[in-house]
Length: 398
Image (cartoon, rainbow, N blue to C red):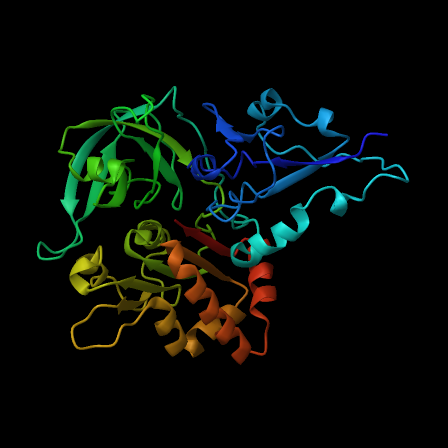
């Protein structure tokens, strides 16, 4: 009897088509077409290099099939709109158990230490539209504005870029991303893959009813697409794909409490959440808390607009790591200082946590949550996993 085979798959509903896994895979086992990103079972050696780099957890999916010959083909995977259910597999008395099929189990356990698991959308979140436009069928957007957010004296050049889709639909929700295709070709002569950017405007636009979309983009040394965007002028046109993302979404429940933790341009989805909440419930007190980190005030995006938001509606903790004459402080340090506040929110089953920014912030934020959970006599890993299963814990770092 043929031994069962554990096959690596990617969840097409959650994948945001950032292609980081494809660029990371040393075996070139991951590829894509206009719709899906897939894994070639004949090339994948379960090295797990792709697992920790996936921002959504969509790549951490496995199905046991009746044998390697019964694995889902490339054509099968390209046609998937959702993951197939696990089929019943008959094991012979001499066949290996599922855990013994390959070295995946031990490697997965190690890879999951930081990721925590597969995210779920808030139960009250609106149903997102995903992958409406793709590489072979992008939508053209026109630049309505490009404004510098950071001080002219700051080394950080961060931009607020507004796009309009010339009457074509682009139904995007707060927390989703879009892809921008930079002009030209790569060193192999191929068109550049889209680079993903979180949307920083509410679903109905920068101004209610205008249905335009804004991005928060920082100029980076050697940044192909980011610098292309930062240099755009009003009236310029670009090709866009998306929307992408089905889990990092704002709950529609007006009583939901939001604990937002971000650094730099990770503030983009938090801005969209805040503006949407203002339009949804007005200046309702006690609903949102934000820990926002930057090097200095003049390098913090939206520093001016943030000062105009009522502290009753949005409790802000702006944290700076490079203030002259002061000790470095990061978001996780301020969280520990505000232990009572964070602990109270962790105990509220209507609290939703969103973390966005550089991947390097993850370890410090996790350690802070762990310490704060201990003050409650709780295990942070169990609490985090429970919140994630409830659609109340979300991480998107790059």
